[in-house]
Length: 168
Image 1 (cartoon, rainbow, N blue to C red):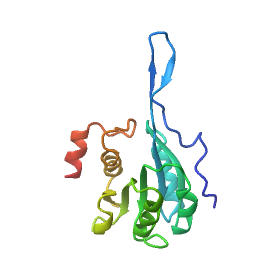
Image 2: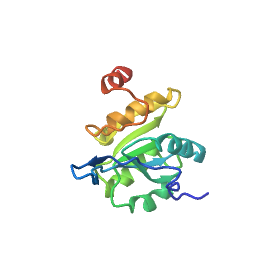
Image 3: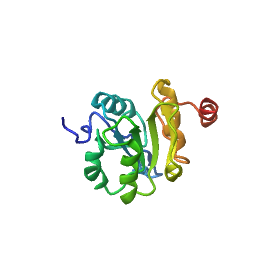
């Protein structure tokens, strides 16, 4: 299948704008550049569909296996990786390690078994592991926490306090 990023009309980031006193509009946002990788293309497409409503989040690439890493790593900047875990062709952790070579500041949210444990060498980059049996709000909460001080609007997640309560 085609592994290019979804067309702009399918996944788009809503830009943050500021209106100056003279009435001009200035784009002040710096969207979080996100990659989605899972071995099931349907899961990738569903995640992209969900994320397209997120202001400040731009899905720049998608993939289904370790073989997609060289193409994805060629991007100038990747901030967030949403990654299906151990069931991928090649370990999901191997995919993260390969992307970290060129993008050492990536934050990652892993989808998999809630029993999955993060290897010690990846703990600084893995923000959360969300069980695939959890409701969607758990993933959205994990994404909010992964991006830290730059809140994402439009995912249907009310407040940071509610997110923390959900994940603890």
